[in-house]
Image (tube, rainbow, N blue to C red; front, side):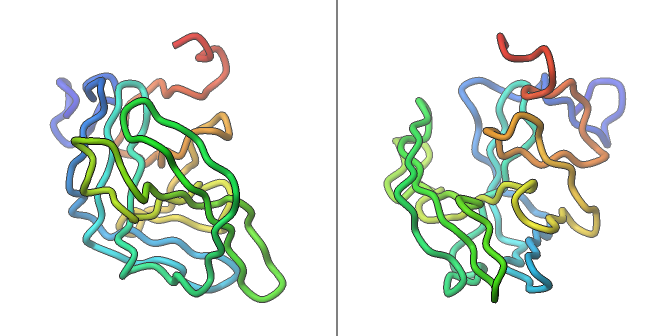
Length: 160
């Protein structure tokens, strides 16, 4: 929590390496008018300078709307991520979600949970608040009104 206001969190108080915590808030993802994910059993990754990334258990995601893609990325902490494209009717959101089928030691609880890029779907919510996407396109953090930055990904943060 932020030292100045206990109701706020500063991303500069988050650790590195990142910490995996339960997220006792309702997390929702909407695309093309369909609720793709809705859960109060999520996990979140907290890492210095980044807004939280929320990971939703597969049981709370419409997996029938997701297709695996060939895209892979590697995180020095969590391991290899695999990406998923979302299809709802004629609408498509390419590589809009990712998961860790075999996460690195210490992050095993993330196995098969899905995270979504807020800028590639129509709406992401934490409780009833619509989130703002972390800048930069590569990062998957969700910015809410109770967070203090600055956040990695914004202009001028490339060297952080």
